[in-house]
Image (tube, rainbow, N blue to C red; front, top):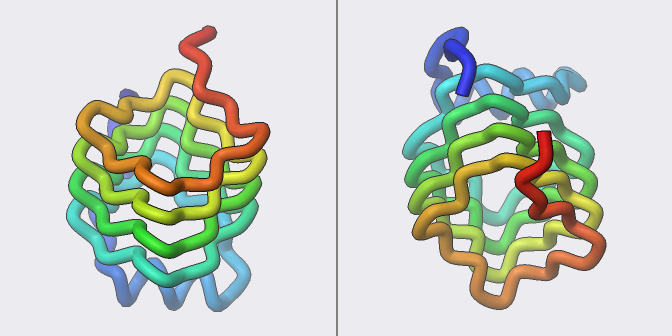
Length: 108
């Protein structure tokens, strides 16, 4: 993973997203509660989402390339057309996740 820009809080993330910002690449978002949210077509590439609670959210079309999702809770999350190329999903909970056409490859 590349060098992260900075850690941001849930409040900062939501404020940015509500202003139309969809590029959250290279950020430290670890331990955030992102449950029950709609983050479709958002870029989280190269970001740290370790231990995030993302259950019951929609990340359709999102980009998690090279992201760290270790121990993330993605239970019953919509991941349609989502890119996880080279993402770290170690110990992530993907039970009941909807992942049609999602990319889980390890290609460079």
